[in-house]
Length: 333
Ligand code: AMP
Ligand code: MN
Ligand code: MN
Ligand code: MN
Image (cartoon, rainbow, N blue to C red):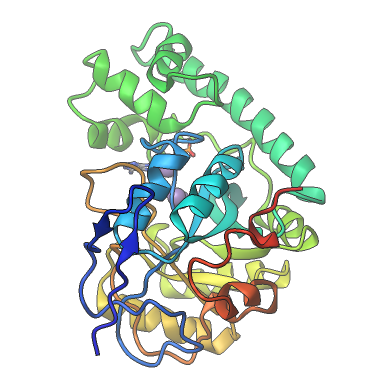
C-alpha cells in the first residue's frame, strides 16, 4: 500500500513529498523489507558546513515528506535550538545531534551523536574541546596550505565560511578554488585536504573511545558514521566496530547516502554479528548535490534493529509523527 504523507506547510499549502511512493511514514520495529523510510538521521546546516539554515533545512525535510530527522552538524549543536522551533512549526520530529570528529588508528572517523535529551552532561565539555580543537587545527591547515601556495589561507577560508563558526576543510576547499589553486572542490580534496594529504590534520581530535564515552554518558546514542567511506577492508572495518562497541557505541549507519546494495548487505551482516543497531542518513550538505534529505539508498531486510528501537530513542518510535514537537525530545537543557 502506498502510504505517502501529505503535510500541511505553515502556510496551509499541501506539499506533495518528493520521495518515492514506497516510502514508509511510520517507523517500523524491524527492517523486514527492502525499502525507504521517511527518516533521515544525518544532515548538516549552516551551523557547520551545510548550506541551509536550520530552519530552511527543516522546511526542506517537511516538504520532502520526512517525519523524523536529526540535525548532526560537525562538532556542534549550535543549530539545534533553531531547528527544534522550526520542527515544531512544521510538525516533524527533530532529534538533536551532532557528528563528532574522532581518531582511530590514524584515520579520521566520524561518530554521529543522537542526543534525545539535548546538549547535557559530559557532551557540553566535549563539544567545547572539539571547538578548540577545530580552531587550532584550522591554524595548522592554514600554515600547511600557505607553504603550498595559498597565502593568507586562514583569512581566505574565514571569508568563505561567512560567520564566525570554527572552520572546516570545506572552507579551505572553497578558498583553494576561489584562488584558482585548484579547478574544483574535488581537486581540493584530492590534492590538499583529503585523507592522507597535507591538509588532513587529525592530531587534534580525540580517540574514538573518548568521544563515544561523552555521548553515552550524556544520555545519547553513538552511531558510527558512514563506515563504508573510510577505505577500510572488511576485516579492519570489523575491528573499528569492535573498538567502537567496547567504548559503548550502540549503532552504525547501515545506509549513508548512495550505497552499493551488495556492500550494504555485507555491512548488515557485520552489524548483526555484533548486535548493533542500524541507522540511516543522507549526510545532506547542500541542495543540488546527489544527496537530498531522505534520498539515501533503501535499507535492506536485516535482523539488525532500527536505531529507534534503542531504549534511549523509544519515544521517537512510539509517538505519532508530528506529535513530538512539544515533547522533551526537543527541549534543550
Ligand atoms: P572537517 O569536518 O573539517 O574535517 O571536514 C570534513 C568535511 O569535508 C566532510 O564532512 C565533507 O563535508 C567534506 N569532505 C571530506 N572529504 C571530502 C572529499 N573527499 N570530497 C568532498 N568533500 C569532502
Ligand atoms: Mn561535512
Ligand atoms: Mn562524516
Ligand atoms: Mn556528515
